[in-house]
Image 1 (cartoon, one colour):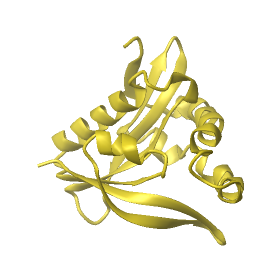
Image 2 (tube, one colour):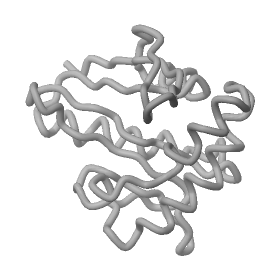
Image 3 (cartoon, helix red, strand yellow):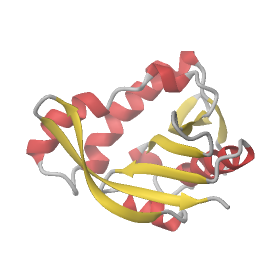
Image 4 (tube, helix red, strand yellow):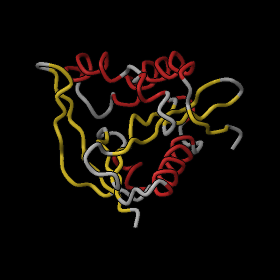
Length: 161
């Protein structure tokens, strides 16, 4: 592994934005019809500024290039529950362990913070990845991204006890 995983900082926002905009269309193309992607991609392919500087969102970096991003946040209602957030790997760096390294760090830091249960809303594309990382499918979701714009996903859960 020649990349490092580190907490993201606010100055990473443009690079994470570019990563999402470049990779999501290619990664999701096989699992979503064009009619969904044309409306959803402009919304989901934007980095969330509140995540970038939260301390539990990470980037994988190699030679100054961001190869992946993702992290977790604590549930607002339950302090012992967390949510995996916006995990993505560069489509040109797949199968290098980027997503795995980011998710392993997220799981470990969540566990160390007292989280006993992690949940995520996985894209249809990422379900096998999350299953390989110990998450279990719960149910199919339809996320309302904006009025009239819906995005199919799968709720997945991992018990950290």
